[in-house]
Length: 279
Image 1 (tube, rainbow, N blue to C red):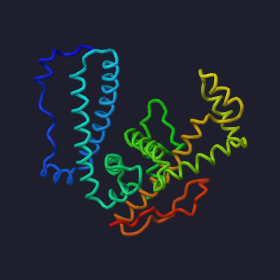
Image 2 (cartoon, rainbow, N blue to C red):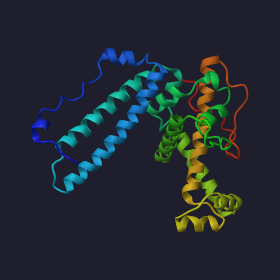
Image 3 (cartoon, one colour):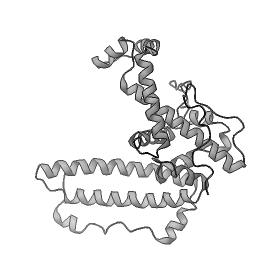
């Protein structure tokens, strides 16, 4: 990497200006298209900022100058914070947004991404959202065909699941606790040999270079990482089902026509969304 001389650093632009009150008020009225673009940009900036921060640490360890790169990290972090403020205002302006953010692990940016991508008028059941988010295992994307799910929403849902895992020890994280319970159940089933047939099928469909992973499948069991992903998906799908319920009731004044369930979910009695209705 080529570092600019100190003169360039000293002439760098002023720090990013904070959002004015007028801009924050305007943020409450953003269109869904604008929000989709902003959320996508937020995560792109975040990834660049993380990579730059890692490089700053490496340069500092090597005793090399990194002032301009450090300035960039600071500016990117500031922009992230400003976007959060804007998304906080946008989601707080919606009843569904306030419900989503009431769930531990779901912040304003994740909420904004979900609401910007999901159109409740096209989602009469939770299954419609699951399919649109790439969480329907029957949806197959073959070469030459249009992708049957929304790639950006699928990534957002992955981030939702990752957040539930991070907050799973929080006493008030409803979906994090669900994830932990489901993970324990998946491990118990795997130990009992429940997934032996699935492991054999996976070996026929895929080639594994990792000897440890291949051996695990050959023994009739699933790797811990796959068991973890299965548990995450259950937590995310229940959250999306609850989100569909809330969005539908908020829009039409009544719950969805048919109750939703998650196949083999042990807590099938937990149907109503937590903390709903909300002011």
